Structure formats: C-alpha cells, structure tokens
Image 1 (cartoon, helix red, strand yellow):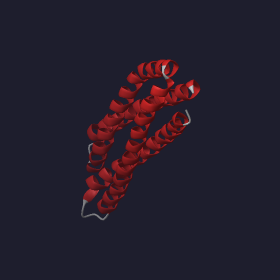
Image 2 (cartoon, helix red, strand yellow):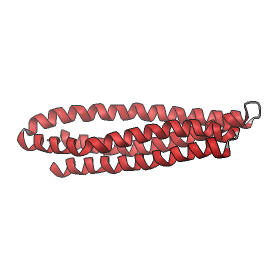
Image 3 (cartoon, helix red, strand yellow):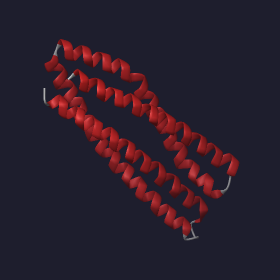
Image 4 (cartoon, one colour):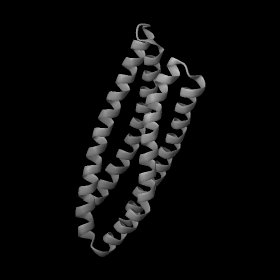
Length: 165
C-alpha cells in the first residue's frame, strides 16, 4: 500500500507543477493580451484566461506546498495504525472524488458557455469582446476539464486501493 500512497502523491505533486506552469503562462497571455494587443477581442479573452490562470496558480501552489507534509503524515499513520489510515483516508478520498465530479460539471458548463459566447460574438451584434471572452473561457475550461479528469482518475485509483485494505 505504501507504493500506492507514494504514487498518488507523486502524481499530485507533478500535477501541481503543471497547474503552476499553466497558470503562469495564462497570466502572461492575459497581461499581454490586455495591455499589448489592447483590442476588444484580446481584452475579452484576457479576463477568463487571467482569472482562471490565477486559480491555477493558487491551486498549484497550495497542492505543491502541502503534499510532502501530507505524504509523510499519511505514511506514518499507515505504518502505525493501518485501520485508522484506511478509514480516514478512505473518507477523505471519497469526498475529494465527489468534488472532482462537481468541478468537471462546472468546467463543462463553462466550456459550453464559452462556445455560446463565441457564437454570439461572431454574429456581429455582440462584438469582438464577447467572442474573445468565449475563446478564453472555452479554452481554459477545456484545459481544466482535462487536467481535473486526470486528477480524478488518479484519485479514484487511489481510493480503490484504500478500499482493498
């Protein structure tokens, strides 16, 4: 089981670095779009890209900073009281996996909203700003949907291993 614990948290730490990197890139794209290009399309795009980029930076940093301590504590708990580990970590992972279902539903909804905004923006009446907002929202939501799907898959596998104890 120690292998599964280590493997899960290694994936969490790697995933947090991906979030950090993407958040950094998104923040730069948003800033360049807003100030350098400074037209309606890029300013519309910069808002969702920048806001979601900040979320990616926050989540990536939080997960990265807490992972090592969490891993150490859980390995110790597993070695000392495996039944307590299985009960507590099993409950925690069940909640984490339920949250991923919610995240994916929100991300899918935002992805669809992004396409609706893009469509409305290209009709002409809503303008380039709306089209940019749609592109930014759809692209960031799709990216988050993919990343959270991988994280949810990792979490489900880990939860399954815990249940086998």
